Length: 403
Image (cartoon, rainbow, N blue to C red; front, side, top):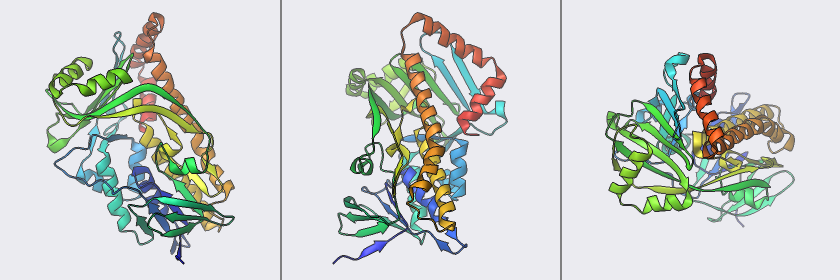
């Protein structure tokens, strides 16, 4: 008979959001000396940071997110590896003259946020968790059996380990196996689009600025990177209708660079070089409920949005922070951590912001994807008008930074 290992909480998904959740929960103690016992299950070995390579998957971290990384005391470690603070953002409409610019100096801040590679985030978080005596990582491992009991949830892994906990947290992404197993209802739709992501080298410096051009087919974003301080590297996210995205993926590098240069209106001159290209289907989904007794969804397992403004990761980190806060309150009061009342407090706090952000991204997508001439005039006028209204623009900047 296999022994059952007992934990307070099991987290499924060792990506950035799941690892942040584990790090925040590991800090929680009762009476200052009884920390929570955490298990983290991940199916794939974590990415290793190689300073010679740039991970094409990046996150645009807000100041609010940076404060979470400072709370778990790893922000300096992230910066020591590689992070690019961006000072400005330049957004314009491909079908008109509408343009808006944001600058950190307008709100007396040192930057608007940081572009950080996924490999930097996950490798740093994994190193941090490996040093926590109250966190055990099961990797690579998958759950092969779930038993939802009245006072615990029991999990059997494919390596024959059996784990028991008061609470299971699903941070296993947009195709969450946990969400599927427990039959959480979701609303989801396919955009009929794909995003191309890669790392590029440009003729001109990125100026520590994020550049975003809105086209009817979708946005094209150039996100600045600071690779060995050259200032000519960017990560791109290029949303296109699926057929066109696949055509672009089939081009040779030289021809792809030419089409990308034209699509960006040469905002950084010619695109000189690209690394390996990746293509990702664009879908939006939202779980009707994030919680049930003994189970909570966070990050993309609960909600996945269009990458139009790069907010998906930040929403997930906020989920992890709020859930940890509610668990901390329950733990010190000796309340069952899997109690639905506790979990619903997390849902009530996070669902409105997540839905509002998703609605805003959907609105942007529809407005800039429309060919209606009246709407095109209105959106161009709106961009230019807001650009001239300092107070409104500053409020938008602070909201985007999470301040």
